[in-house]
Length: 395
Image 1 (spheres, rainbow, N blue to C red):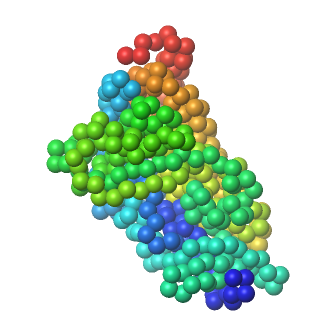
Image 2: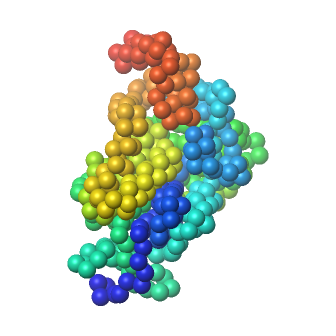
Image 3: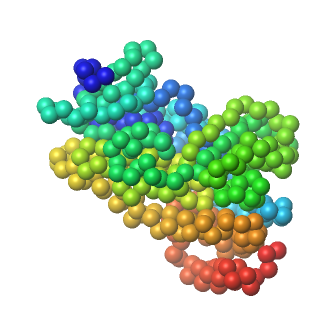
């Protein structure tokens, strides 16, 4: 394979055409860079499809891609106790990942990226120029192109990351699976349902998210031997969706924490799931993927401008500066509250608190910790400590 002659030369090769890769490719193409967007054909990630209003604003998402606007969430405890969390003045947008991801790839193509279908294999680094990216295509077989930089956006099991980023193969995962079903006519399409029950996931949660005419029913776990297929069957029954028509099933790993390093200090940076930017506890990834893709692209653009590969580190530094604290807090929350059904029961009780609801939704919709309500933060801290110490009732 190494004897294959490169057919083209690019400033940047972006490997992976999900939200992170498509955003990175579009960002660089709009800066006038010559960009290759390489994506595997037909790859769909299992995802509830939730996006916050900030994503819609920041990345100029048109209304027709939002299949539903959830105005509340219903949290279900291990004892089937239900707590509703209404969203005051906001919403959770729901997208169909098939349509959403393809629209992002088309937008990158329209911005000037050279879109190709293929599977990344490896990178060679000859002495006489930029690195050589090898990939395979169904129609043309083994192919190669030159690129000054490579952005790896090829998912949680990223080949780019594992071949080029130290310790990328040591990141822990939750394996997630969902079923896309036909939404029944009597189903409430304005509400998300989240199940915190050990029988549906011993360390994560189950979800039912409406997408208009379709819905996503899913769960995930890092526990080996746990039957996700049975959990999905049980989840469908719990939600009253056992008879809903199955459209398709999808499964994939989700990273549990960001990589400590996103670049190789030379010519590669990773973004999206390849960099581990899925929020702990919530599993939210689309906004963070697109932001990391933008930050990775801006770091590469700076490197192209200055020939200083040290600037690749800017991508992770900027992401950590804006979102590192919330990822740290969510990680602690997942380890503690998801560890047993007794703790899940108390967690669901906390979700019924108006202060918790208000700050949770404000943080979700705007993607920043809310600092303007110090009294509410104090009240939440006191209530949280009461639950941690077992001093508050769980119902």
